[in-house]
Length: 114
Length: 111
Image (cartoon, rainbow over all chains, first blue to last red; front, side, top):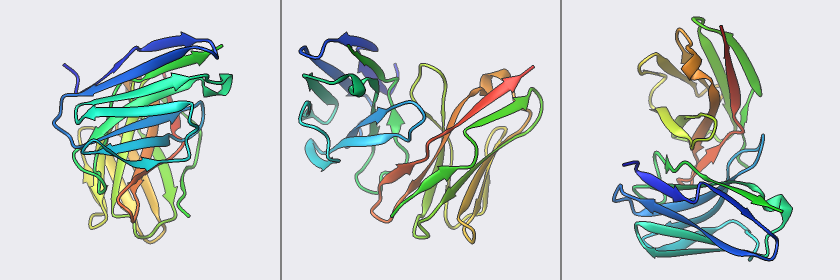
């Protein structure tokens, strides 16, 4: 069983759809993250949750809405997205926040917005 | 502000040769550095890390070198294999304890 599991792995949605990405970590970590990865660009940090509280929101548009119901689960709710939001969305976890040390990543959810 | 850069977007290496991937950073207060490997269709995976009180650290076929004077980090892969084909990211922990990532270098291993 991998440490960080993301579902779905692939998602195609129209601009008016509502969908959610799910992440689960089995490592007992206290912090969870959402990153956006676009081609030939550095990883973009979107949100950070530490002990289920949002501690970082990097000017992400409101059409992305995170939810952290407990320290093991993280969701990213998607609504009225734009084609430029097509990217790989990576979930990660770390033992602590800040002074994160190593981040453990999931395999990502490949999102295509039509 | 922070910047983490890699010198080459693509590195082509012949199988069996050594690979060297470079990374420059600007924040002299950075105290922790990581190299990640990301294979096609997968998430980034930890390769090796190094703290600022060290200049060199070795793993299995990989060596990380840290030159704090010129703010330069490198990853050396010995006897590169086809399975080493991937994108390699450097990351550093900034003065607020957050990881900053570089854009990545695509390593292509040729037979």
